[in-house]
Image (cartoon, rainbow, N blue to C red; front, side, top):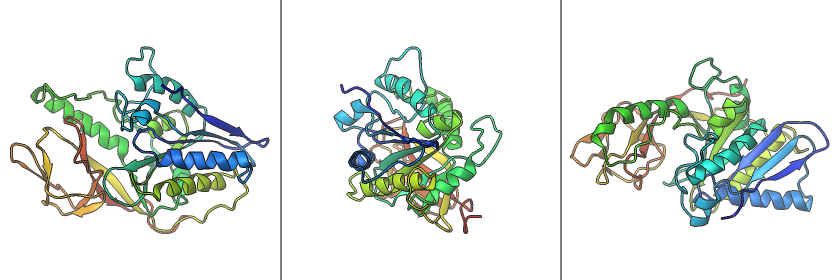
Length: 322
């Protein structure tokens, strides 16, 4: 297996410390291609760092990437934390990656998704003092999100996961053969860990896995982050007005291999309250509990894992930036 690899550039002038990741999930290669392109530009001198520092990780999960799969032993982007007793491959990744994240101020994590759809950005919570995800850099994340070149943002990730794990605990006894992860830290991925260390972070979903334009979306986004934070001499991109924002509210797991969707859903397909989304193996119908949107529908989801999400409209990024 290849060793873990990061590539660092540092300017002579002070400035923010930025890190960008690719292939946290091994079958999501758009970030890898975008970062490889950026490395070539920096090494050739066609792109110059004028302040701060930049760390690029083209392949965050080498085992999953080598196998062309989403995971090695488990999902790296769940319950991400260092451990004194690494067992699974992703535990070793975490022991390398988490200290690297903590040494930076801003993270851009580049991903792609299974079903057809348009690119979007996942942002953190509003500023708060809550126990789940206290935060004080919402304005900085929102300013970055408006400059990535996408027209849709999604929040509510960690709170939705916490609810989903609680629901798994309630039904665990009825699914003795399923590999249910009941760890309360289950929702902590790269961005959540980054925020817990005092930084801010965005996950950019650059498009469908096979979309040939997705690497361009990722490359453009890195350049936009660098320009906005003053790491290059490029002009600050104009912030997008009235970005559509949705808040994740529900995560629904697949309970049986015969659970099936009522149609081929795409991310952000709208649903009306009471509309059928899927059918359980026992014939019971899963209906939308509110008017909203289906997000990340995965017809290939493993039993005991996330099958789809539901989101509701939000006004968080409505209108021009203040």
